[in-house]
Structure formats: structure tokens, C-alpha cells
View 1 (cartoon, rainbow, N blue to C red):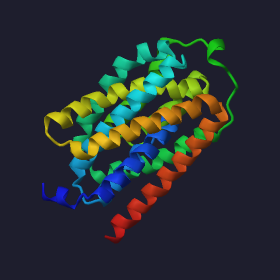
View 2: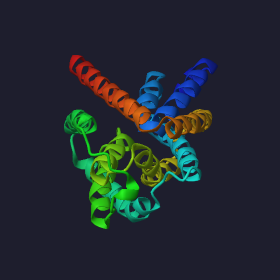
View 3: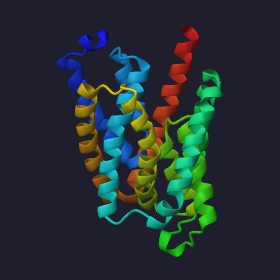
Length: 258
């Protein structure tokens, strides 16, 4: 791993700052990987090591957010208990299928998914609180499992899309939807993280400080999400989706030029 010789203290500091920001954003609206991955790639680390290291850092950040939301009693245990296994299975199937899909198609599907999510986010919805809404098993499965499948087959923005889906189709408050997404997202990421560890692809000298920073960012972010409520979360969701859209358009343009 000659590329590790290029990772100086300067880069470690950048990774720590990036991890904190990614954890903060991810705990509120998802999309933390869209911040961490480009920075890791820019440092010269090969893609497979980037994905593994990013996954490990994000895993601990999501764990922290899950704990914070659980202690605040914001997680819908009914939604999580019903959706967690189906989401795991859907993610596994998606991971199997993605190996047969060309990169170009994946890139365009991700790009198309972002404005669709923005449409649903900005579309005026009925103000129905969770306690006044009957959550059926069917509705819970239909609103979460397709996102779990997306996590396995594509990945970027999974947490963001699941929050929007829970809000629009289960009529959960944004804070409850955000909180309930975390344990589901954590579960779908565990298998991937284990695979990367067993394959020896995690760069621990980078993953550990990034994970700690990610946890700190997640703690602060989830605190502000709980305190700021729906308006704050919705603003962050819009920011994340626009950021993802711009980042993916730039990526396509650069790949065409290259």
C-alpha cells in the first residue's frame, strides 16, 4: 500500500473535519457519504479502500445517531421492527444484482432519483402526526423496502430517500422519520462493513479518527435535529438533495470530458 505514504498529518486533519461534517449532515438528513467519499478519493486512495473506509466511519456515526434518537424516544419502534429484516433482505438482493448493471446506467439512475425525491419533498403534504396515523404492516413495508433495495443496488442518499418516503407515505413527523431511518440504515450497512473488514480493505489509520469525528458530528447533528424540529430537518434535506444533484452532474461532465 504505497499510497499510504502520501497520507500525511495534513490529510488526517482534513479527514477528521470531513468526518465531523458528514456525521452532522447524515444524522439529520442522510447523504454523509456524498461528503466523505470525494475527499477520500481526492487524497489518492484507491476506490475500493475508499468505499470500505467510508462505510466503517459512517457505520459508527449512524450508531451514535441511533443511540441519541433512541434515548430521546423519537424512533418508531413499530416501523423499525417490521421493516428491519425485509430491508436487510432487499439490500442483499440489490447488492447481488448491481454486479450485472453497467456503471453508466447506475450513474444516470442516481441522477434521476434526486429530482424525484426533491419533488416529493417540496410537494405539500397533509400535516398528519404519527400518533394520529394508523401504521399498517403493508404501508411500512412498501415505504421502506424499496429504499433498502436501493441501498444495496446503488446506495448514495439512502437515508435521505427513506426519510422522505416515511414522511410522505407513512405521514410521520420529519423528526420521527429521521430517527427511525437510522437503525434501518445501520442494519443495511452492517453486512457490507463486515465484508470489507474480512477482505482487509478498511484503512484503520484513517477509519478510526474519521469514525470518532463522525460520531461527534452525529451526536451534535441529532441534537440539533431534535431541537430544531421539522423546519430545520426539511431545510437540511433540501440542501443535501441539491448538493447531491450538483455533485452528480459535475461527476458526469468530468467523466465525459475525461
